Amino acid sequence: MLTMVKLGGSLITDKTVEQSFRAEVMTRIAHELAKAIAQRPTPIILGHGSGSFGHFAAKRHDTINGVRTPEQWRGFAEVARVAAELNRLVAHTLNDAGLTVMRIQPSASLAASDGVPLSMDTETIQRALDAGIIPLVYGDVAFDLLRGGTIISTESLFTHLAKTLPVTEIFLVGEVPGVLDLAGQVIPLITPATLSDAQAGISGSRGTDVTGGMLTKVADMVALVETLPGVTIHILDGLTPGVLHTALTGQNPQMTTIRAG
Image 1 (cartoon, rainbow, N blue to C red):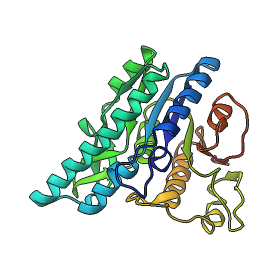
Image 2 (tube, one colour):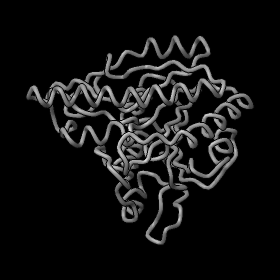
Image 3 (tube, rainbow, N blue to C red):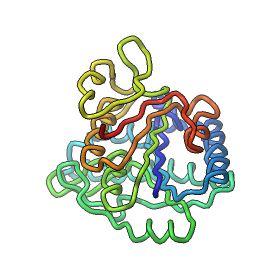
């Protein structure tokens, strides 16, 4: 049993203001994670989006669509640098809350083809888990066989890792209580059969998000449960205190669950 938790870029940064880290929100989230893990110990991989760090730089250089010129490669390196800077801030906050985390830089071993992850070294992640350490990954750049370089979202990274690691649950923690319908109500359950109905009420991301916002995230997660029907995914609110802790300890807060059927 392995749980993945992704802290959305819109949760831990203000995606409308470049390089704006929400330190108070991250601190509270870190303590909720620490409390939940103490109450219900389970192997966890943590991840986070790049928010207003990586997405602003990526949009300036259009990195997701390919890297060819010297200027684009300079932009590629800039995106990697600022994404790693946010990762450093997140890691320090988690450490201060008493969690033992290890930063794992995806771009150090991640390879992609046309924006889809092909391979990534998971031995370090598995060794960290075996040692009781929480691996901390994040949305990052990747060398790409067709595009030269690109951006890989945390959801795409989770999807790739879930195919090689024994993942059973994924929690996507953002700034909304779940996927909303046209009336603004939370859709409690999405399956491959109900995806098209749910998509009608899904909008893009608030702020700058080069990886497509909620619409892309939900489609990616539905595709994942189709491939791996043993995985259950939850989309929930991280801005409301206590929700993440409640979800991780096996209770059922208001949220959207995505499963195969």
